[in-house]
Length: 132
Image (cartoon, rainbow, N blue to C red; front, side):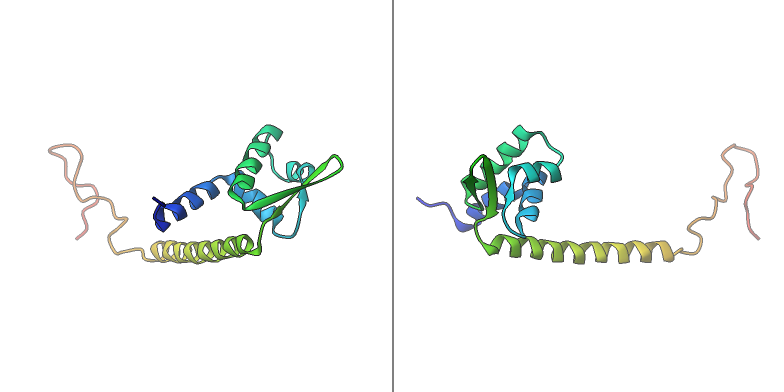
């Protein structure tokens, strides 16, 4: 029995859910990149990069080619680059909305919000900040 489409999609997004894999995909958007150049751009151990590249290769999102001693990686198709662009647009909208909300919160200094309490912390003493 085949897994439901929503489950397959969830597995796909889980596979993408690693910062090194996302960075690799971003770097491959402009064409093939050698493992050596990926290591220069991504601050990880070679074994970690190799492991993440293997995950991407097994998933079919990237392909590798060997030219002599150099191994190059490339996106298997343009849809992955489009997915990354869509993610960037979505995140831009979300963060723009959040920054607008933050600005609104900072500007909406409600009356009485920052006034000290009108009672004393010590019994028997009058309130220090009573307004008349």
